[in-house]
Length: 499
Image (cartoon, rainbow, N blue to C red):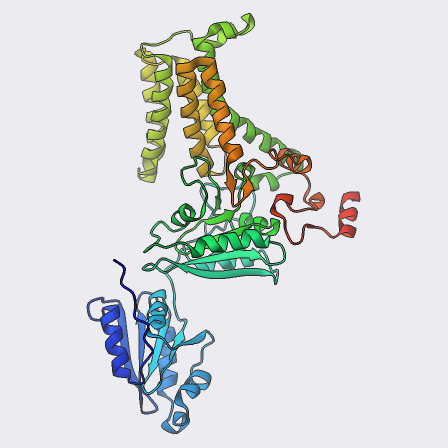
């Protein structure tokens, strides 16, 4: 059962406040929660802070300035004098409730309590442990910025602001979790974002009732998306601030959860998951080529194994000129079971490499993919073509920059293998239809998941199939119903197109 913090005002007696804080914060039991008492102009004061969050040098400087204050300098209205004149620091605020003071201290700032005053001064002296921004492993580029999000909320918001100096960019902070008090930054451009989408996102976050969010952004996703058991991802994750910035310009909302190096982009359609920043870092023909190769890889990763399995089980479906496609050696295990075992084996190798120390992950991959597969073929367990097509599927799965979508396609691929293996052609057709209907019926924050294919929007679909020059990308996605639909002023738009 959650313990509710009492709604109690700060007392004028410093000792009563400190006694309450010692009991509530476990001072003396928790070694990292500290209270430092001293005098300022003859008046008793106390600093309350968490050692790991506090910037020690900054606190020492503030204490030195306060302790140098003379009695006559603060004797009249001491709280106002200290707050406005004696603290040489910019990030100050005040609280009157003890529960608010506890929340602030546990979030990292330092609280200054003054004997005889019913308010406390909050000094944001926190200094979180933070690693330097590095290029994300999943969203690497051959050319482009190498900075990525880290685990500190303020740093991540700053990385986005560095790219968007729009005065309309907002970064609202919301707290979720009755115990964890997890900070969530809600980023959007106020004159671009659709108010209905924004209010929907805010409302769902406010309705999160839980003690804590240990898995950060993933826990938040499971609370705010529709269809929690849907196999397809309804939000997009990115670890790149430039990707987050371009989605903000399009009218999306970006959620950044403290302690997470990933930003959540909402709403997100299926086609958002298959685009990559690499396409916009190359020439236009190269970008179109890369995009179509990615589409081909995704298609092959889902359908090539079920199609080959189908024509192997029913050779009469093949024209005479393509009879060579079937298996030359069947192996001692039924073909359907071979594919299922190979599918599970690839996932097992993938999981093993994640939990294996980095220096030997490559060796483990070679052992699993080459040695085990080759031996399985030689002893007659597997047909050689099964290993070939399973390898093509694995390569195609990793061609998408969205890790969540690749995992979804793994499940779809396994589903189609089972339906095809046991129900042949009707199984493949009905299985594909079930998957397509699921995708069409899915909605991300009231946005159709398959837009602009369904409902059909020709211009938007062409923008997805063919990477157009940035100078001609004049409009934001219509489905987002943005407040400012034009990305280019009309005069500049014509000028760019003519050039």
